[in-house]
Length: 463
Image 1 (cartoon, rainbow, N blue to C red):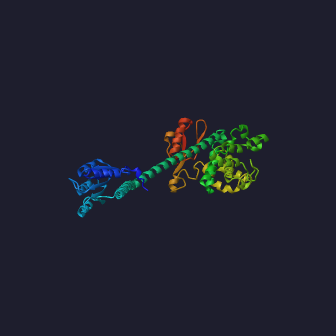
Image 2: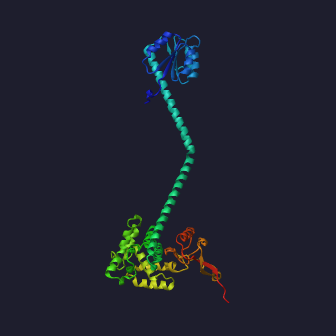
Image 3: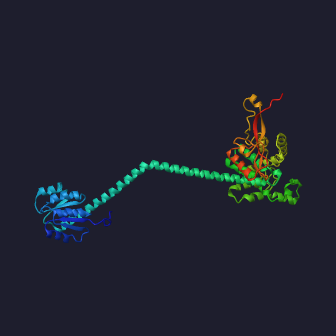
């Protein structure tokens, strides 16, 4: 229900040329909730209407000198069109009443002499009617304004949606780029850890990289998810992290050459490796694989003497990759690979899972053959295309300066920093990021030689 007390008080204007009537009306209505204004003529009333702001009801006598009541109400309709109008008449003149209604837009008419109670009720009803109309106009104005705003909003909605969509897409791309930078930093941190492990001795150079490459390819070939394959790859890169701190004198011995005390110290490295990375939540799954990569298939391994499929698949994969790379002893070529496979064969069902060997066979040449890269992609078109054209070309090593490198080249030799840290393994195909990284390394810790890559050149004819 409308609270009219919040609205400004309504002004009621009485117009009559008889002063005593105006005084009588003022006394009669002095306790009402509206303000009473009076004027002695139509002209004075019109002037007052120009100045007053809240006249809601005009009550005018019909017979006045100058402007008659009908003429005044007709002009007042133009000055205060929202105000209600009532005619006071002391004559039974139907024509004047009709004119008051038609020309002056009278709301009602009251005959003289009036009944005080009736005129008070009539005035109250008119004031209340005005207030209701005023409130309706206010609400209608609000609705009209809101409709205009809604129309404007609808007109601009498509543009706003496009702008917001563009902003959301931009934020999404920024978030993706930030996440990719975090993932790249994470991968580079793992790589840095593995290279620090390999710095402990010459025989360990490339070991973590080779084991990780083998393990990753086998995991993918077995149909493991990308997340599982990545966990195995990270664990393989860090599988020897627990050996840090073990004296070199122990590490240079085979297990069967160690004293019981030395063997106990050596066997702690699997659990120590898990513990070393357990503080990082993202590495905990990899830590489990590191713990179990020395479990043997027959249950004679350590630290928990798991058997068969009790050993996590990732740990079994890393164990075979670790054993193969140890058997290769950093040698390359078919004879070294066949020797490693022969050694693996003697341990199937004992230390190693026999079900993994067929898959490993597929990927050994991609890690240890000089002219192929991990994943099996040949580094040159040899063996493909026209045979006559192929026979006319050969692969040769070529030494380049860092500034001469370009994407697409393949490393013929691994790159080590001046202080002996492995930077990139042989067989790696360069992209723009790797080229930039090599150039940066050559400024930070320059090697003594250039970069050896595979180059395709025409064979020299012999006569």
